[in-house]
Image 1 (cartoon, rainbow, N blue to C red):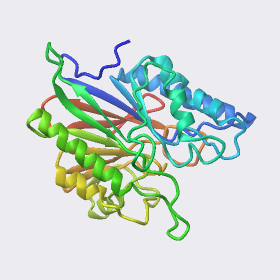
Image 2 (image 1 turned 135 degrees about the vertical axis):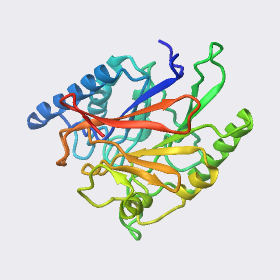
Image 3 (image 1 turned 120 degrees about the vertical axis):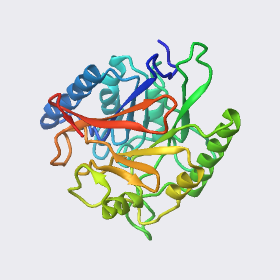
Length: 303
């Protein structure tokens, strides 16, 4: 299969974001819910025919699970069967117990359709990387858009409490990659960012009120603001960020020129009142903008 990401002939590039699938450990009461999750993945991909799939963390529960690697293989099985290029970032539940990020990454790399990368070994986290979407032109060699992936970590140190934050070395790495891409192309390419835990600015966005979608729980961001949003704003290439983590939030809105988006919870084996689904993102080559909507488990669409 062709693992290269490229805009279509009509200039579009469509991404489906699945988040918080939370496949369980195989207990009898979890099996039906897990089957529903995998069927949702199949149905959404069939309806949207995406060019790329992104999993934004918490693919599985690992705490108290006898074989988290088996759970993870099951979680990604339908994505793999779809034959669409895909990539992932880790959430806070994927490697709580009994498995490491490196082990789950090795499983991903067994499949040719997987584009997930380990990223630099000398910065925080596993899975900080950038992918390029090529132009639809006949040569197809020119870069047209960038996709950044960041590991937002798990839990903060006990003296801080709450969730981890994206660290300064990761932010420095992002800014360096952004500058290199601008130098290569002579301009800033439109870019998207994917990570699991929302930034504090997601809460600010809701308070500002320029949003569409639902907020049924507080924004479970880190207590520490490490400055990623400021770096994105200063570099000026990222036009949208996509997170998961909060199962009862799915809103999106513009804050200081960046569109902050929640995915829609995709897993049935976890809490949440929202109807299960997935966020769809459609880029148009040459535009610093994107369209987005939520494809629901019954085939409907929410804006």
